[in-house]
Image 1 (cartoon, rainbow over the protein chains, first blue to last red):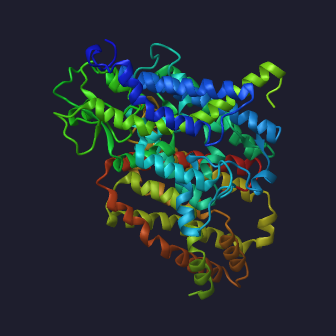
Image 2 (cartoon, rainbow over the protein chains, first blue to last red; image 1 turned 60 degrees about the vertical axis):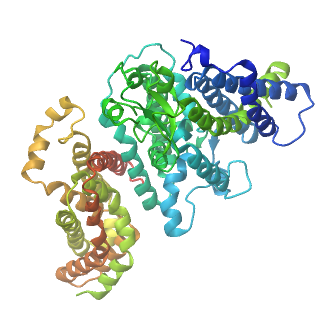
Image 3 (cartoon, helix red, strand yellow; image 1 turned 90 degrees about the vertical axis):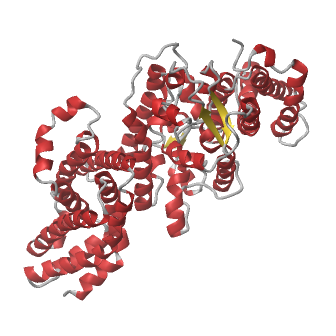
Length: 388
Length: 214
């Protein structure tokens, strides 16, 4: 089996290249940020490697008909490069990963999408953004992230979590460490925990007028930036978020082969699930074709498919549209679909392509800069012994 | 009626509901009852708050506020109240009926029996514990009560303060509109359990260090 498309129906190399042309042009423009191509050797190498890497991934997606197999490679690379690039930038600018109170007062904390749900109620009630960042003008400003979030939510729904989020690739990477899951059964009740965390942080942030999630719970502070430890309270907060990172991003994904942080804890993911309701793309199941092998249930990283949803012919609201179940189904009973389009006589491969163009564009655009930067720093490190 | 206490309460009602909402709303969602029943539960919650307020009215009158501000006993006492309350919330959120871990639930039969015997225990305790938050309006009320000439006047002052702050709770029971969504009950209970963890932390910190939180 050479993918979900039978070998006879796979597009030829020329057709695949033609289908990739729009992405080649767009990624060239996005990776160069509209500027002339770099002229120094390290810049040329990092640009060329990123450009070839990203477009090879897209080529393989089109050619083989597999989505998740190739997406996951870029998605995990994206996360690793994001961490490399982010941390080295912090050291370059601040000399440390810790952010001081003075930096926070100056509004120098980069805004990330995880904070969006907790800022909405205080913003509506008090017309203030409860985050020590800048509204506009910087690469990680609040306005920039809101615009990106709205655009990607409209285009992808919760696909955001598999095609956009720069943290998601971390637990995805750990979930692929072992071939077999050590923990096979997880009580489905725990899939409601992200909603409870969401309720808690939204209420607590409205009460304290502070980003409660960032202060107390965000596991990814471990690999990005965190408050300088100046009190017992911050010390306890540090213990909490580091423990959560180790447990939810490293250990549990490796043991369960699922994205446990994203599906059992992340309040932003829970919030993002609601956007699946307004997004036109969905994953559908044709129960008539299904042979009940349950491979999709076993492989879904977000616990979004079970017998009940299969009987209904769709995935749960929490589906991240990663395509893992689509790749796993040898009966082609699971496929990308556009809401309202016919099921029985539809053309799943066309629907899939219509989804992966915008989805991949987001992934390539978001990942490209970080991958380039990380490669550039590695080259500098090898050549000069320093990343700065 | 102590009008000054009432107005003080009314003007600070938003701050009070903001403190209580993270506990009350998840609990109401977790119970999954209708609006009428939620009014009854909110009443129990408010009764707990009133009890806490009146207790402080007595303290304010018998001990001068200055002495109580200075004493090292205030934070540990509230810390212990928080820890007891957090135990109830955590049990309610993660082990009561919707037990995630049977073993843990089976070991907690005493709590189960306690909650079954007196279902009002949790809302009353929640009201009591959240009523003990030393927010600025509460301290103002405490000072106001301390200035009263008699115990009855001090209690009336706190009672009118309580009435003023309680008016905004009228809307809380309307979360009962979502009672058909059973998932929200699970989510509400879990959120209450998580809030319990936060109160546990708050209690421990108050006991060991008197750090100001929430």
